[in-house]
Image 1 (tube, helix red, strand yellow):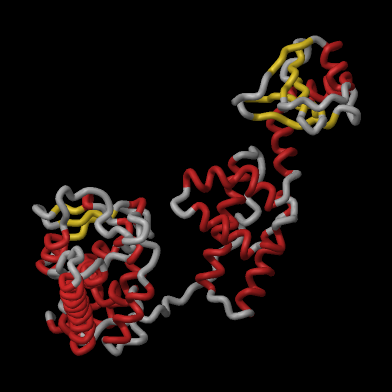
Image 2 (image 1 turned 45 degrees about the horizontal axis):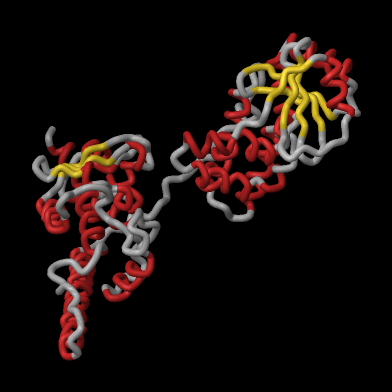
Length: 400
């Protein structure tokens, strides 16, 4: 419910400012003489003068008692001459932490795909700067701090992401304060060597992984049959027999191997983005790391997997958490069991994506095609797989 607003003359506002009562609910008294001037009265008894400078925008003048009504009127007139400057000054007075809590959080949660994650990152990494006034943050001290993190062994790519999260807050501050310059405008990103390990499966490893998945599904089916026999012997209701995949894990792994989709993209995949007649999956920009929509053709195995698990009607998430009924946040326990059974302790889920790209390159697919299928924003990211096609350069020279 909106707080009561009363329009009053000077004498009435003056009396309200001098009163000592504590109302049950906050209310505001607006001046009918000085445009924008208002007195806010809190249940605590605090009385504070403000001046309204725009819809949803107001500047705090100060508490009644510290400011007389006449002083508040004069200050309101000064503010209204240059409201942008007053708002900027108000914003500049906030610490980084205050700005995040009071101004940036709502924007980040509404506009950014990983808004809360970005906020948490800034607070965790840049904690020593949270009490510093936002307009006093300089590129020099940020550069010094990031060098300290590099010397402590933090990867350059990680430090770049840390700075990017902080820069997002500062960009929002600059956008809302005309005439200010971004504090990190002259701070260049650290060079990052593309040394990510390209881990792909050998034919023997692929065989072991797939066998581990088959064995897991078969074991679950055997255990269900055994459990149903026990139930039947005691006249209890039987559970549905397991035919095919016992749960979401095998379909997820097989789709990763055959589409190169990231784990997060699989978790967010909806049936509305799957077209079995055209044999395609559409990865939406809102679910993609690169914020680009891409279409992935389904090969025979990927199509068979989705056909086998398609419900009727096919709506909502393809893979729903059996616990929450919503989106998965991880499958770490099941993945650890599978890699142990397959004797592949160093295999990460992300390596399934690497395997997809690697197998394509080794079979002669052009790097540009691989780039599009992987959803890479630039060719540099795909170039890491080029070494897997050693015959390409020799074949090119042989054309002469």
